Length: 267
Image (cartoon, rainbow, N blue to C red; front, side, top):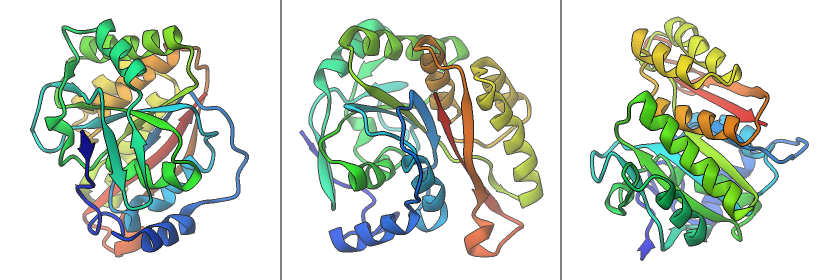
């Protein structure tokens, strides 16, 4: 199966030259190093590209990126794994790591569904690919979306990913795709996002999950971030670093209705 780009020409330029040119504006000089996990936004590049670029500029390209993202479309299953095929964007194509995908599925078959429908029009993982392609198109991917999940299910999904990574012995980075607060005044966004970011930096998935729900933080990808944290801790992560935080107001000038964007690496 070939998964064609769903948001090329909308969230990012639809031509190779245009896309490479825009992504290159967001790449920064940084020491690249192996990273177990990361949090990265998925808005239109004009808004969140500077955060995404700063994150991927820090990541030493692994053999495989496991991409965890929220399901915005409502298509597919609760937790949907696309286990085979190729994803295309204007600047390259990425093969799914079928071996790792199969092991993730087998580690939690009652929870994780083999389901491509959830991925056909979903942008949260697709928007990661232009930054990955800037550094390499040889890397493989494993795309997984979360529509709904309890804390226990996030833990089980994260544990399944960690177990599969250990079994394959592959060099893997787990990307959790999420924007932060949506359409609130900037001061409120920065305060509420700060609460969530504090738990991420503390490698505290339960604290993140419960804080997002109890404080009503409109962080669209808190489920994949929670699962990523469980996986990262299981794989030996001991520290996290906030690379960049900003809001859409930096581009739009609208401070009354902003979206927050955070970039974090977990090592």
